[in-house]
Image (cartoon, rainbow, N blue to C red; front, top):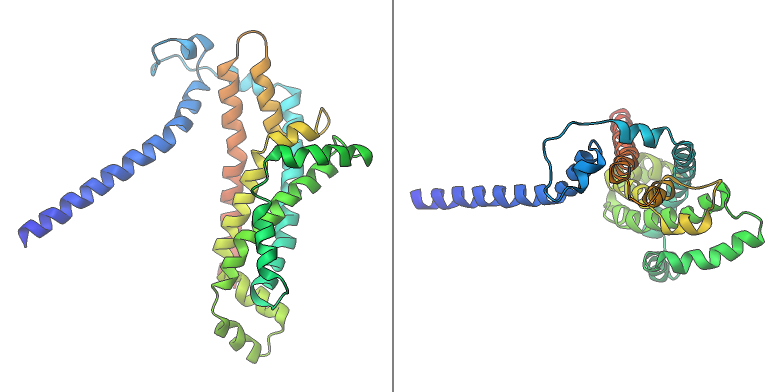
Length: 275
């Protein structure tokens, strides 16, 4: 009995150690970027990494003082926010319909949605450049919203179908016997039960389009540049790459998704408490 307890204790310690090591390895690039964002350029390019240095806010000041950054931030918030909102409003009901109703070629529809994620960004961007130029919408927010809507809609539907399919049909049938209409069954029964998985799909689609670079680089030139495009431009400033500015822009680029996850989580918890 004592040996069994000791073995279990050693197994738990080993599991904790391995888990901690994996977390540290995963977080190290993020922590290193944050650390470098407070360094002078000489402290970054030194052959021996410096963990002790005099921190500076000059990198963040340079990023935030750039008009291009403010323009890119505004474009990203407007374009990505509207694309994700429309993707959720259209995609979640569509996923429920596919999961619950006998739609012809249901498997083909699901495979088509999944195949959209297989396409490389270049394969999507090249024909879209021609389409938006012909329509006079190149380098516009509308063209970017529609383009990103293809990504958010397919991603949200693809991830939401299994969430609705896992809900026992007996729950919905009982609600229907109580006099609930199909709309009320969806809104008051299916949606709250699958809400956590749905939130994961919405957050994932937000992160995808927020960090997307190749399509935005191809479909914008000045007026509708998103924040990733602006951040990538910092690497071409002068002959020396301003690594401190690049790291600061990376940190600022990562903050909005974290805020979005926090706000969406609070909103979801509030909605569930009122149900």
